[in-house]
Image 1 (cartoon, rainbow, N blue to C red):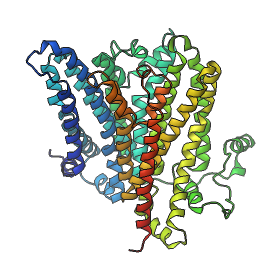
Image 2: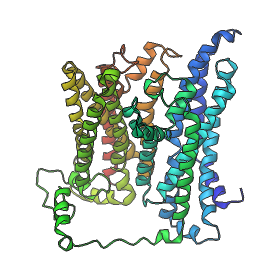
Image 3: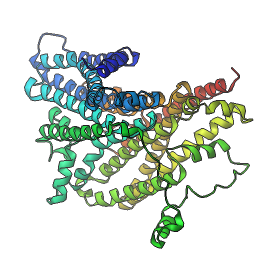
Length: 550
């Protein structure tokens, strides 16, 4: 506690109402899960199975809370110092780079320990019911939680040391966390059952994710994880610890006064490059960012054009490359996974594709839409928009269409994978159509809800973090209820929770294992459209208020 950076970080975070709200939310939700299965009499040994039924969703729920809450604070820690102008003071102060890093690292880690500790009463109740082992399940589970907090804090600080804006740092940090938690398992899932060096490398890579360790400690019956589940806990602790150490060393190397002396490269003139490089650039830059732009046609919304040309993330030439990458990846994943259709089934492959699309929507949607209004207010550009003859409807429609077109391009890029699915099994044509409708409604919910949040925030970073929290709760939180189906939630309660999630309707249409008997369409579609309509009404009213004279 002699570290002044640590004291400042703790005092600033502990005084925040967001920290108190997060702690209360974890304590209330975890306690409610236990109360649903608490016995009505003193017969404890007969309800041990009920305790295990609560233990599984409780463990996965705490893990999801760590993934949602831990990266937000360290991802903006160093960036905020840079924006406030205090980073130069810290780097030139008597404090060493290790003191600066340790203050920020342990400040965030201490808060996360307090957050995780809010679930201890609920976990103690599971133990007292006689269904969970203290030394074989509960203590190793909390070690996994602690290592997750350490790893994601180290990732956030490392990313924050490279970025110059808080929203970009949040975006890249959550992308890295999702990659470590989910995408690291993809090679092992695809190559499972084969015996070669690629399989061994994929197995080692999957240990970076906490999912196999959580699957081992909660005794989940996932066929794709059975091969690596036996030693997943110890391997995750070692892999995550080693990766955290590497990221710590990289961050300490960045914390130097030269961090502020970043010179911009002058670049090279295209004509001075070799002929091969010139032809390569002509092939690569389908939309050349250096080409002189033509005038805006009269029928095109100028605000939409302005968004495509000026925003740092999601500019048109990068969007085309992203669409091409999504098309190649989806098609390649389908072709590779098609070799396992006998053991997996086409429905299981399609469910994996839906989950990957959902992760992409949750990652890119808030990144694009959170700065629509908040970014203009924060930079002062909103005052310029108010001075133009454009109406509030014209401004809002231009900004929304710039994001909607982007999301549609991403959804359309995955069509080759579904075409291969229909070719493998033609009877899935109707199912694929319903899946695409569900994903389109999911994208609409993501865009409208994020834009609505952006209209109330004064900073892009706040809008981005809030959007990630709400959308992860809506899309991933309802899937946690499905995970606890029959233990303690019944089928009707699970269906009532999943109809709030249009992406769950896509999984149910693909007959994902465990969702074969759920009927979510078209109710989930109407609820998703209703949420989007309500968010649009609030967003329109808020935009009109912002365009009114002060």
